[in-house]
View 1 (cartoon, helix red, strand yellow):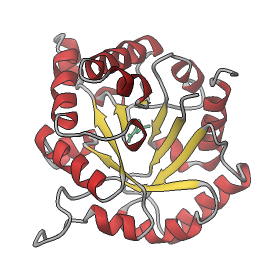
View 2 (cartoon, helix red, strand yellow; view 1 turned 90 degrees about the vertical axis):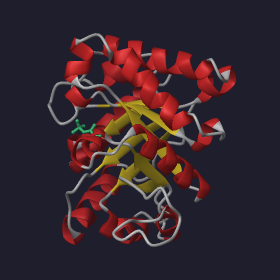
View 3 (tube, rainbow, N blue to C red; view 1 turned 180 degrees about the vertical axis):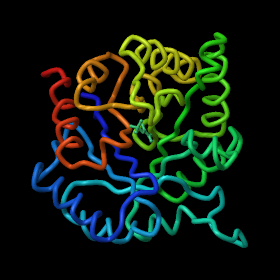
View 4 (tube, helix red, strand yellow; view 1 turned 30 degrees about the horizontal axis):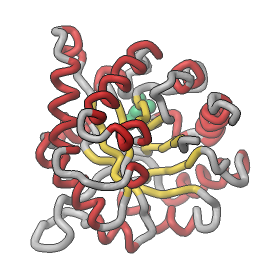
Length: 256
Ligand code: PEP
């Protein structure tokens, strides 16, 4: 059975007290994640070590929202994936649309960051997704193919060491999720494009969806055959909502 994923992107939210309250809330709701679906939280960098401590022996994974494309060196203000690993992180979100939009990150950089993350032993969560304008002008597949090829062009790794996230920019933080049909169409497109290079890898690769997932739409999106879980923004900041979405994800896993 293919493993499912629920990853919370806390963005630039939180402080020592609220982070602890959120993890306490998650653990009160769910003493131990189910082995069929990983549960991961990605706090802002300064709280990585706090989260690693708070989640010790809990079964909850911890990641970051960005990493440098270098492992070490004179890169002021950057954070090496090796440092993330040393402080207890296991995942790194790469190429999130807010970084593309506000920090001007491009496809090439995303590919290099993914490689550096893998070199350091992290699992990159590689985000791809079109803008509203790109979708409206019929360029969604052209954009997804370009982003995917840039990120996966360099990468040779096992299917369980990498996660792909389809995150249409127009659905992130807007409250308007993509319909389950759109999500399925784009996940299928991404999987087929990867299958050109490696069929088995493509079939096993987790492809998760992100963009305004909430309790009311999670089941319909997660039930789609090419969806292997979700990347959750605002709903991940509420323990009850996040765990309800997690339970909904479990509910969509077919019995063996
Ligand atoms: C995200 O930040 O990756 C995200 C999906 O945000 P939201 O769920 O708030 O749309």
